[in-house]
Image 1 (spheres, rainbow, N blue to C red):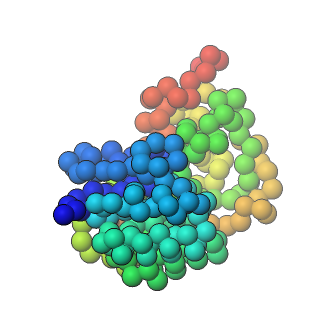
Image 2 (image 1 turned 120 degrees about the vertical axis):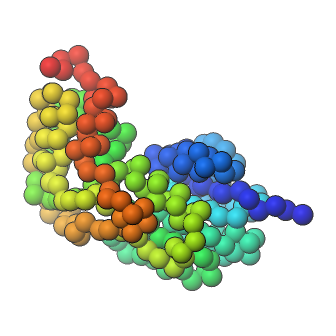
Image 3 (image 1 turned 90 degrees about the vertical axis):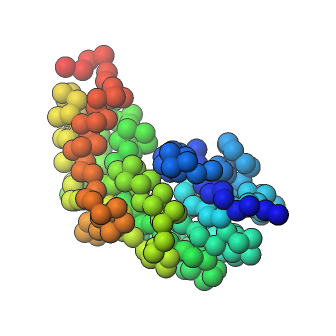
Length: 249
């Protein structure tokens, strides 16, 4: 007899997935990581890897770049999960784009007890992602005028852990953002102030970037607290030394 007490985190070695794993294991829960680079092998392009990953699983979080999976793959995986009695499924999604909405619809149509987390651009892109090198070199080229309610990855992980383990979130979509809109120039200024370094913001055309929606309240809805502000992220990250350079003041 299979005891279904495992939580599967797809992409559990990634930027957000590893934080979700930490929250769940911190609650004393059994967690299985599914990915192409660690844990149980899982590949969106190889359905043969899906069933072994779901064995003994009661809930699953699709956290590791679901954008690489076609909506049809999300739907097929979700249906397999439901058939395997892993009915609680959480999808980390994006705030815009027809592909993201198609993946969400595929999940909802599967019959799962689903929850969608639509996340804004990560604050951690400046410290763990593509914007780290520009910050270190002291010149960040980004769209001028575009504003974004940057969300802290820690908030996303806290929300994901809550909806995976608590009742009342089925059929809900949460908009996960920071508490306010910041331009990219504002964000760079906050990092410069937190580090005591001179970091130049170089404006680029914003036409290809496009406007973002206003801040959402998904973090507060789930966690009953406000989301972390970008300045808190900048202060705490600066304290780790990740942005230190030899010419830092």
